[in-house]
Each structure stands twice: as structure tokens, then as C-alpha cells.
Length: 140
Image (cartoon, rainbow, N blue to C red):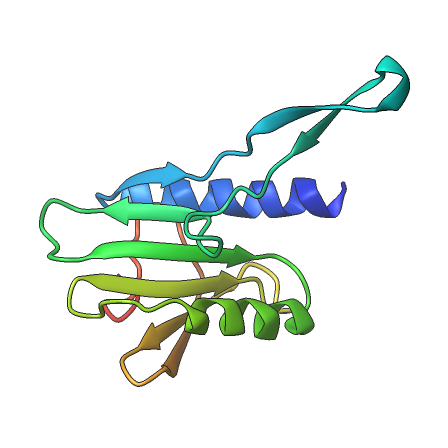
């Protein structure tokens, strides 16, 4: 399984989990563009596929007064720090937006959720998503 396939599978798992907890979730989609090369050749490329260049998923819930922005990371801890810096670079309105970085720690079946709070402070929680169970209240 390629890294891209692992990342897409992890995004889909998070999307389904959020939907099971009452969120309506949209996933950023890649846009295919055709480049015309010298000699009449053509090449398709994908443009970046993140909301605001940083979020893979956007979720809203009819009972919550915020919009949830989620960045998914199925890769290494190096990738986590890069994604954290990208999330910190956006000017978020923490009164109406929650920003989370979901990752897969080495412990099998666990999910780590880091949340960016006002003052660019990160909080972290780790849990094992189970079918039919909600996330810890701090996460959602």
C-alpha cells in the first residue's frame, strides 16, 4: 500500500468517524489540470487538495457552534511538525473554529488528536476509536 493510499484511507476513516458522531463532513478534492508541453505532448497534474492549504476535512454539526477543520497525518513525526507549523500560520478565529491535527501514533489502533487553541497552544489527546462510541468530549 502506497503512502498516498494510507493517507487517503486514514482520511476516510476519520471522515466516517466524524459522520458517525453527527458531523457533516466534506473532504478536499484534488483538481486535475492538463499541461501542454513542447512538441504537442500533454501531461495531467494534480493541484494541492487542502482547504486553505492546510485542512483535509471540514466538519459542521447542527448542535455545535463551531466549524471543525481537520488535518490528517498518517506519516512520521517529522510530518507532524511541518503540518503544525502550516496550521499555526493561518489566522484562525477560535471563537467559531476548531483546528485539529489527527495522526496515527505507533501504538496500533490508537488515534492522536492535537488541537490548536488560542495563543497557538497545542493540546493533545489519544484514544482508540471504537464502533458505536463517541470521541472523548475534549476531541469533539
